[in-house]
Length: 279
Ligand code: GUN
Image (cartoon, rainbow, N blue to C red; front, top):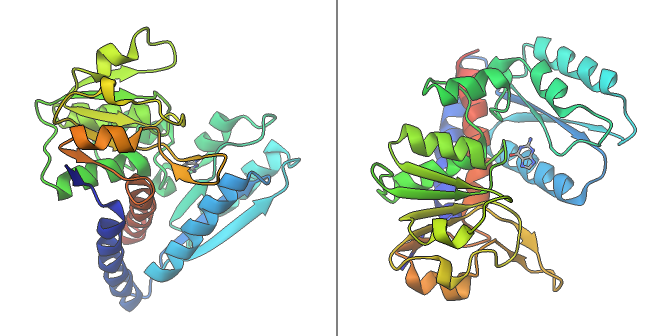
């Protein structure tokens, strides 16, 4: 069993990105990222702080627009329009989830697709589905980059994606399909999850449920990617996979923390640098 070390790989990527950022500086460009954070969801605040710090060390200027949970949809749209027109901002990210009274689709659709470094705008989603260039959501992009770094080619593999969210599962499915894997995608209404995971060479899970994936659900020698981030009652950060029991059966597995999480942030930085290069 080999660990897929997302922390180490993301550190290497960040060093490269810092160099690219310096090259942009020589041309008089400072890459800029605007983040919209609505409300006081603890996890969202932590993620935004991590993104801010990562921008800092990579030479990306970041500005956080913090808003109360009572803010109106119109006000958020107004701020997005302002950011779209700001020539010093290359990327815009709206931290999800948004409060219930806000229509998330309307907010995402207001982002200029050229600044959509999260890859959530239907324009970029459509391009991904069609196998065209565009911004790709950072978490599944980070998974693909991690696989590539360990010379794992999805071509011809039986892949099983567990979780069908717009942020993770669906783009993950499309990236794997574009890389010629055979993809099974499972979700909350899947009848017998084990039936699907058991026959997979590559299992990718991002649901947010502790110990969802147990030893009996994984075949010998499988590659397991755990996108889940959960906090146990003891305050420990764990994924969706019962790591202790599943890991010995795997050829490769990601740890949590230190697997996909740091790759997500590295891909956000990379998307932002690319946006600045296309300025
Ligand atoms: N909420 C959970 N994951 C993400 C993400 O990757 N991007 C944004 N914007 N919000 C999230």
